[in-house]
Length: 464
Image 1 (tube, rainbow, N blue to C red):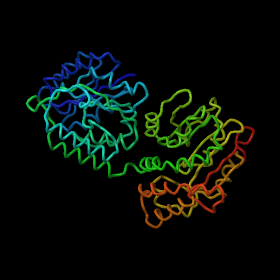
Image 2: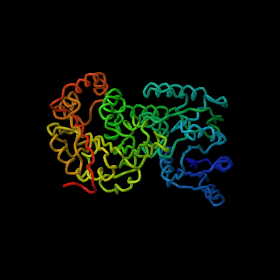
Image 3: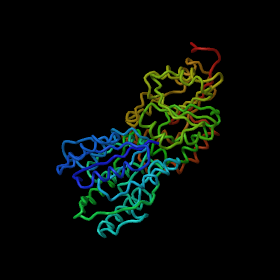
Image 4: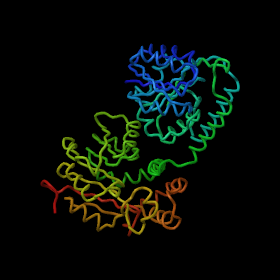
């Protein structure tokens, strides 16, 4: 793996040359990206000298001081490595710990690794800092249901794809809690490993103060309370309704074959349930979701993760994959031409293959909830049947699903005019999922969704 070491710098003229020397001495394939955050003590001049002497060193100069978070965001824009490591410009953290930091990522066990100062050998430092860290760790663990020993550590290593899924905003030392909140809310795999720590005193140049503790608390609370982008937040909320996801997969599983193309995989709520199949391609049009999928799953002979635009990309790219199932759940309602999309599914499928489609049902349910999720339409049984048949499919199965969900959607969307479904309401709904099993026994007259299964007709091209 190639490592990108990002170093934010502000007024570190006494230590910058030594830390660069130590980072360069680590025997790893790496690039070093230094962001000077408007230094005024001669650090900028020293960095120009170092950059001229070191071809692996890239220096970015910011015109004015904005803070550690702003400097790191600038550095992240320039990384080209597979794994990113954050390195402070002082000598508190030892680059010889890099192999220990990246090991869980290299072994496919972690997406993010924190280097804990409290698990390894460390210089005895200020009790006030120790107490502040303990309080912030406790609050973090309560808010995000985790067990960090050192959330505020500088040493964080993570797959480069991870940070590209975040919308980081803090310009100061609020970066640490904001980064941690994003990691935990998105469900990434996190490890802590022991590192050595040689903490500085204020007379030696320590910059963080008690005020930054309140900044950290602010970002922990803000990120816990405010929703993320509605589409991502909805997918994350759907991740926790595990009984519903199990029930839904149980309804589609009989129609899913051995060589599956999942279209619109999102963050992988259904992908995870497909991994027992011999061959799965998980795809999404969103670069953000593709990066999240690659951070959550390990690609190999049984799983590929690709970007695929239903409206624009050539379906012929999957011709050699012998796909027997196209699984598309709550996707085609977002597209410009859903019928053309169904035609592309037919081109992708091997003869006799199936398109397993889940779409939002009942136009009367169309509401603000749909608009915020980007739904362009909801479907009737007649409409989805006709479109599948015109695209060259014989409809084998067509049924409404989730009657209670339709009622909840109507109340939240049409009556209460909510922007998205409340998290607690979704958890409550998950408790009554066993009642949905009755829908197998008695066909329901309407539901939140329609499940349609179309078998590819023989011959080439689309049918009239």
